[in-house]
Image (cartoon, rainbow, N blue to C red; front, top):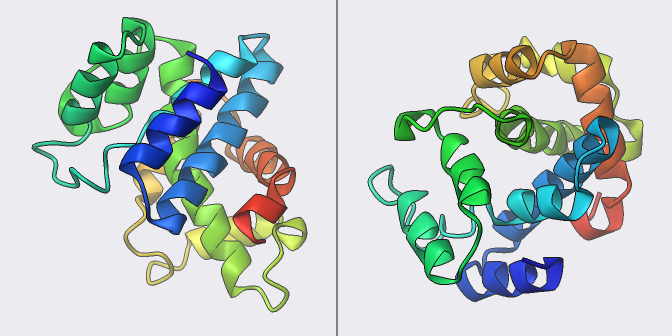
Length: 183
């Protein structure tokens, strides 16, 4: 699947600008990790872009990401990509047994958390966010309370990367698309 095809699917199912920004953020982080690991940047980017494409229409744990997987199978998307997308939600029981799947899980919550950190800064710029500032907010339970700190930590551990290095790589990836994220 090409990036253009994935973008078309995302926009067919997702209208909320914040969900589209989330998809773009996860895509950017997936691309950065694919480059780091010597993997297919386009394929990993597509997985990031589409991982939540069904969420707006099917936001419950009973439907997401199951409905999305059905839709993608009908469109002929490779099962490896669908499995990676399915595994980003622990409740599906789909194991994260590939580097792609582990990376998606590791960057999903973290991208949103980093964006939240940027939005509370006086300048609202991703460029001024640092791993230290993210880790400081990490300790504040009331800040972005819906974001699982456990999942962010577990994601870095499953990926086998230091949390600070992980945060730094994701910040750098998001900074490259700061204009699209309006940060």
